[in-house]
Length: 512
Image (cartoon, helix red, strand yellow):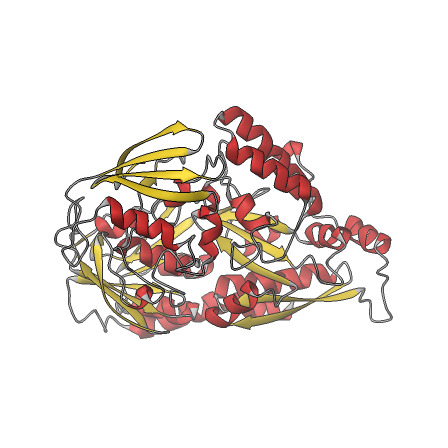
C-alpha cells in the first residue's frame, strides 16, 4: 500500500503549496477565459478526432445537425426537422442564415460533403464506421439533403449530434483539422501541440454570440500543476481534471468555486481479447472480481461516482437492468477459482500471471490503476503499469499494442450504437473503436437488427441482449460514472456542467 499512500498524498502536497501560490498570473486579456485541458486534441476536425479533447474543444468550433436533451432524445440544431420517408431514406431540412466563421453560408452541399468525406475515401477515419450505412447523399435544394442508406440505421442521426459531428465547408480535406473552420460559437485562432489551443468569439453565431471574448485551452498534463494554476489565478476553468481530493482542498480557496453534477461519462477498462493470456474470458472475469470498485470510488472519487454495469449512462432507455446481467462484485475467492479453472496457479512468489495495463498520465487514472494493482495482487495477478503522455498512449491503444488499458467514453456512449462502435466485428480501427478486436457473431446479428428497428421497445430488447452477452464475455469492464466536477475562478459566472462533460457552458458564461 506504500505506493498508493504516496499517490494519495498528492492532495496533501497541493494543500501545503496553496498558501504559497499567491494570486498572480491571470490571463493577459481579462475578457479571455483560460481553461485547463489534460492533453492536446488528437484532431480538431470532428470527422477525425475521436479523443475526449478533440470532441470537447472541437465541439465549440463546430455544430452538429442535432443536439440531445436531458433524456438523450434528439432535438433540432443545424437541422430544423427530419423525416424517414422509408427505411432507407432520411430527409434533413437545414436552418437558414447560418454562416461559417469565415463568412460563407452553410448549405446542404456542405453537410453532404461532410458526410461523403467520411465514407468515400477522402478521409480515413474511425468515425467512418458510424456512417457505413450511407449509400449516397443527394442535395435536393440549398437547405435540404437526402441521405440514402444501404440498410436501415436507426442510430445514424445520433452520430450527427453536437460533439460527435461537425459540419465542415465543402472541399475540406484531411488536413482541415490544422486550421478548422466551423459554424460554432468560437472560431479557431491557433494551436501549439502540447501547449495550447486558442479560440475567439464568433460574433455572428446563429444561436447568439458568447459573452466572453475567447478561450485559451492550455495543456497541463499534471494534476498538481493544474491545481496550483487554478489557485494562483493563472487559469479560470478545469473540467474533470484534478482529483477529488484536490477539489476538496481547492474548495477552501476564496477565489475558486466548484460546480458538480451527475455525468453520462463512463470510466472503463478494455482487454485485448487476442492476447494469449486474456483470450480466456475466465481471466477477464477474474480481474473483474478482483477489482473492488466501491473502495476505489470511496478512496479516489470521495463517493462522487456511481458504479456502472454497462457503457450506457444510468437511466438510459436502452440500458439493461443490473439484475438481469452477470455480476462481478468484489470477490477474491471467486477470482482465484476462475484463475485455477483457467490453469493459472500460484508460483513460489504467489503470482499466477502478469498483465500490463496502459494508461495516460492523467493523475486520477494513474491513481485508479495503482489501487487496482494492489487489489489484483490479492488474487495472484501482477499488474504492471505503463503510463505515457496521451498521444503515445492513444496511438498504442488504437493499433492494439496493449493487454489492458483504461479510458473514458464521453458523449458517444449516450447512444446504444456505442456497442457496435466498440464491440462490432466490423469496427476494428480505423473503422471503429473495437480496439480489443472482440468478435461475436451473435452480438453482430443483434446490433444489425437493432440498427434496422424503428420500434424503440424492440430495439431495446436487442440492446439488452447484447449487454447480457457482453457481461459474460467481458471484453471490457464498465467501472463507474464519475460526477462532473468543474473548478472555476470566482470571476466566472454561470458555469453549469452538462451530463456529457462537454464545454457547452462556454457559450453562456460571463466574466464578472
